[in-house]
Image (tube, rainbow, N blue to C red; front, top):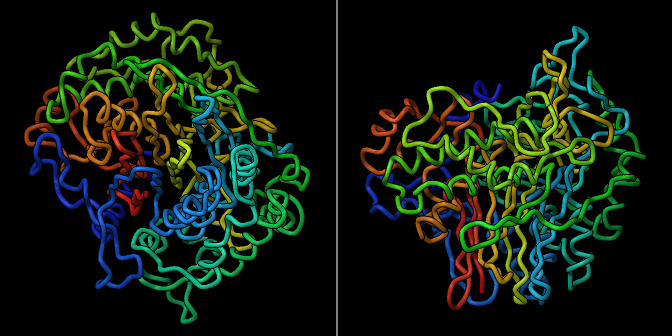
Length: 596
């Protein structure tokens, strides 16, 4: 399913990258340590070609924000300038992102966050992942014929939506780490909802794209102008219903979303049509975000922290540990062996991830076993200078239970932000509605997620072993989201990064980490490196971005074809440098990094 979808995405993303001022060149024409599109300009914010356009990267002495839309970055900086914390700024940024890039995240979605407290030098992981309603069971996406439903049939149905957790998670974080009043953090989102915002090239591309979600009645209704035509880039789009929802949430907190009028509207919409949801008001009111110690693992001279499972951060940590057993740090982006090593580490990482990772409240995830040094070394031994002709199987880490293979098809509607505040607190947050415009269903100005399609559609494999990521009541589906914070060995902040991208998120994070820490690239250049996504027998990448000769050399090393893939990356990153912070934003999207 993912590969069939990939072909449909390729042409659209090529057009979007050009329209949005994205890939401005090729590594083939660049110096070995620089991507030509590293400083690609941002589309004119007002839709006016006379408005100056600015580079994506920035350096600032005190605070830094990187997010996927300039309007969201402006909202975050405004909060920081008013004395707010990183937690305060995240609320303001999410409120704007849900309006200006509703294809990626919003009030109806979920999120993960890693948060660094500068005073205690600790990293906390916050889990705002959606949950399955109490009425959901292992056969949620099994049809009357006993076979898994077609992916888009499931996605567009009421059954695809989980209880949204992003706002509840942000409320918890802001309660623990905020400085300003919650009610003051939604002003920019309210203003832009009432007064309108300029539709960006990327949003317009999805509105006009070949996606079932874009063709859903609610999406068509929202994006249609009075004359019946769909909005295009440069149009002003108003959403007073969204502004009204923000006012309710600002006044009432997450209860304004999960209880009362908005909750009733959510339940009613999910019960419409074929394959209705079992969601109830009790499911919504009973949602609770999780907060726990982050999953941190030593790497090189650093400590890398991610959320705990059901996030797949453990898999990213495993891939980094495997690559420590190679000489990738003595190579670089112009060396084809580097990309073979990355690809092979990814194939091993995904083979284990797809077998073992799920919601730890329901299945035993062998976290310690996956990161066990001896086990990591045994897996890393398979990484050579050419790709193995046969895809790797899952391994047998210590303490792993017998689990069935996964049958999950992760979709692509996600965003990322990173923030450093004036006190040195840092957060890295990945936020999502799962697919493009989520399920395509809309209530009160925002789209509802289709997050439950991140579960395995098949609860058992042919030999009867259960899938770790099978559906269960109250369970959270496995996620590839892995917001990263990097510390030095004394607990000082070093860097934060993360990306959207469906199942490719782990590959995008891994590439950026290697670029920054092994190849010593500036954050922006590391983000702009080619994306290599290797999973099973599939290799996807951006052949036009490699240095001369690399693609041809990869073919001789067992990676015969490099094509497009589903959702492209949207990495945002911040690294601490002498005198301040260096921020970068992915040139494949419309984000920027800014600070003061």
